[in-house]
Image 1 (spheres, protein in one colour):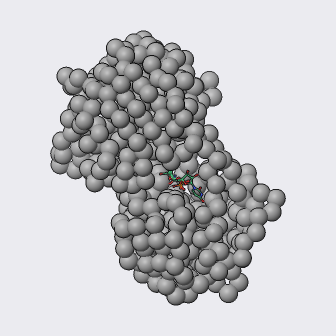
Image 2: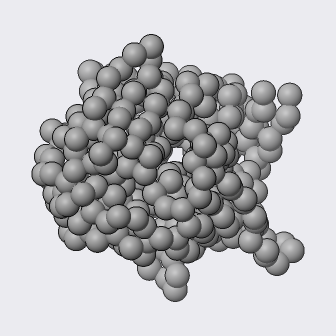
Image 3: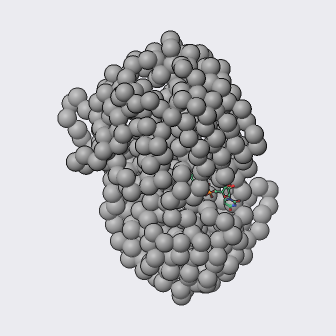
Length: 430
Ligand code: EPZ
């Protein structure tokens, strides 16, 4: 398995192109199942998770071809174009060995059921950060008329007469739950009102794509979506929205190394609660033509309290990364994780680098230290892995990160993007 070696202590300086959002691309890919026409997605990031879902879609009978955008010689490819066509769905079963590799595979359930009148999808099971049930996905589809039962670890769903539009109130905010029901409702008979939906930018991106495919959807960006079901949808070409989690992650890289980065494709509106928190810590953020300039130069970083919340609150997917930053901020910080029950696995690894952190149930108390010290550490999940990269970028000496496959699930060209800004980072293939 690959390892990443980092020599810490170098302030980053340079330009990073923010990629298309992983968590927008995955539901957009599942949307190809809603139409017989080709769906073309551009600005697709180069990630392992995208390949996992391509594998699953092909297993269902879809065609998929991925091409890299051409670029000038000395820069990285600016995204990929993914041509999808689910003209002939030959199989409506998403098997365990494919779904277990990537939980977001559950996103094929709604579209498959709506298009084919049946779907058999493996329960995704939990992951490192929590049990992550899909009970609300199931309840919502049953509300739209689907007959669903669970057997041998699979969700067996049928809607032989098609789905029927109806009001459904989400008992709690769920991102992929919203996306599954939104896509299913696009082909249901009649009107569906989805109440208490997730409002992440990736949802709005999916709504925009579905509307360009001929869906009738109102309420974009609000907590209620009203969908007028259509007999069928057509194909379209959609440009994937920028990845707000990658944006926030590299903003923290600028801050923690006391450097300055221009993050192209970044917009304040993508992370409305995150950036003010970064400024409260002492980081400066400036809007520049087609991006954001984030600087930690001469910043005296101060500890603050943070609680994660569904959008537009502080993103849980940036909690591990800001924890690394607050380890070297002056004073104490209390971080409370309200979305997932086990999202502090980066904490023991950060403590091995000299961080002072105590865990208290859903919260961690951080006492800032002067510096961290490089160590051999282990990635446990996607966002925790970058938290350790960030710590390694500022730690004294060398940090070696194991289980790098976690990182590759959600971040493209990490070493190249950081090396281009002065980082001493390399991947060792073992
Ligand atoms: C999406 O996961 C993201 N993944 C996650 O990003 C993100 O952390 C999460 O939303 C929250 O923002 C994708 O979009 C592919 P949820 P999702 O359903 O949809 C509970 C990353 O790092 N819940 O919003 O699976 C659930 O247990 C990943 O890129 C139920 O109880 O998250 C959790 O506590 C990690 N029953 C809470 O809701 C359900 O049926 C929010 O989960 C569904 C969810």
